[in-house]
Image (cartoon, rainbow, N blue to C red):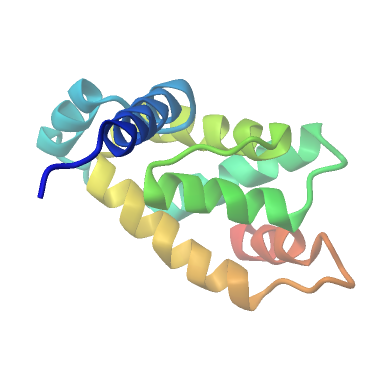
Length: 141
């Protein structure tokens, strides 16, 4: 059974939105992804530590940074997506900048972000919006 023209146009519009979202934010475009996948992770690079240092760096500059922004940034890197929050974007961009400088590939980024995301979800509390950031500072020291 053929698809109706209305359904077809809605599907095309959704594809365009997804493409724009991936190109605009924290995610990488396809050309960068293929070069990152072929790049080897340098020996001795502690990827989760780089992510933690990026969070703490942004937390020093932005006093209003809270745990939800950190979790959003980790999800964005893990899912290769973007966020609308300014704080989340700042954390995500700092993480990506540090990972790029260390030459870390996309699979290692996603794995480390996924591991930290699991830890982050377990160490958040709605009564204390900075609990995760304090926990990460403890890990880093």
